[in-house]
Image 1: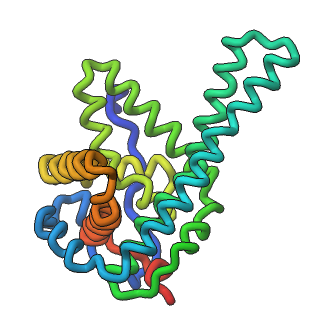
Image 2 (image 1 turned 135 degrees about the vertical axis):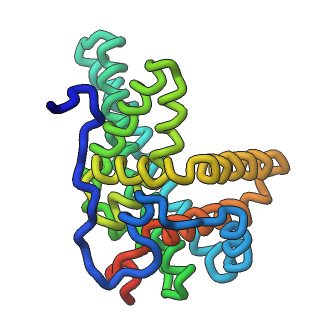
Length: 251
């Protein structure tokens, strides 16, 4: 008899190219891969040369796209109000449009991670490569909506499940883009893999948040090093856990 309360299942076995490097999804989910977070942070720091400027350019690209997407809601609000729509209704519609627009910028974020993977593997890196993944915008929108919905439900259910999912989905975006997974496959693969290394992964994210916060305080100058450092470390951890497809590392 099937359990109606069981978590929805998804086929998480990835059947992509056999010419992969690094870890792999199946072993990461099974907990067969050991990743030392602090050691990886050290590796990332030592490997920053040649990555900082390119990472900053790519980050600026994302920020510009993000700001444009975030501002899309403003003319919608003014337009709806101008034609006589209720302000509350106009605000709700504009908020939904803004959520979709911001979600559409997520392939650029995944592109920065892929830049980090390539840099760590001594491959050529171009900031403009973040535009290569815009064809995944529909999937990114679905991913963003599903993730937000699941986390929101988790917080409603006594908060702890929401905290758990907030950290467990940390690799879902690059998994969807780099492995060409569906949104749900990526969310589940990330959740199951991170569960195996929960405390280390959570500690890594909390440390990143602390570093960024401390970097903002003295005129944001330390962020010149912190942003590319943590971006590269995140990419290296992803690579150690899930590996990279041949197309990702192709020149």
